[in-house]
Image (cartoon, rainbow, N blue to C red; front, top):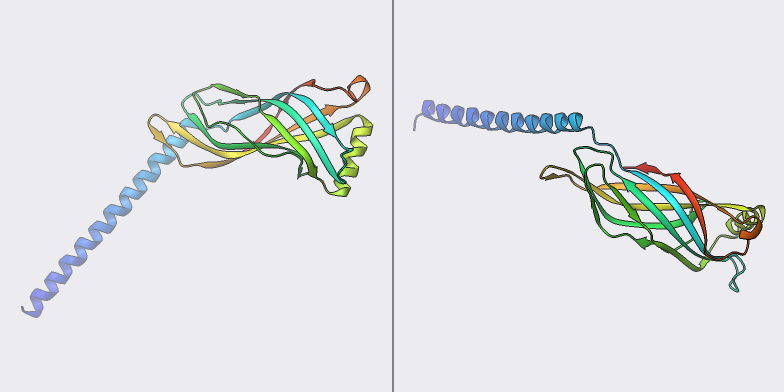
Length: 207
């Protein structure tokens, strides 16, 4: 094969390689543009959570084990999908009670759920904590709030969500929900068992 033929063969390979790379780049750009346009048109909005009520069964700061707390409560938590064209899949949701950023109950799992367009979902899980270790300074603050008549317990939810548009389903995104619950121990409620608190408290949601 002459040098001229080799040069022509090499040039053809380079042109073919450039065409393949150009086509691949154009395809990737097209896919990204389509995804961006779908995102802009649909304008997905993150779910809205509301802590409707909380029923307190046990709140014991005088456990025989030092620096521990026993807690039993049931909460009613609702989620609303505000999107008109996007469904939401909830995966591996777990919630727990927290006080001053310290977890004071075991984690409770919520069932995997699909939420259609503009649908509502309601869960009523129990939160348990038997002799949960609590830092001494946190326990002191908790006792002071209890004696003052009101304790703010945060109900926190962690998990994953996926968006569904038609037959397309997105990857999983982390969702974090924080719901403040103001529990009153004033008056007749100080030693009551099974007291329900109507809260209707909006929660902060990060996706």
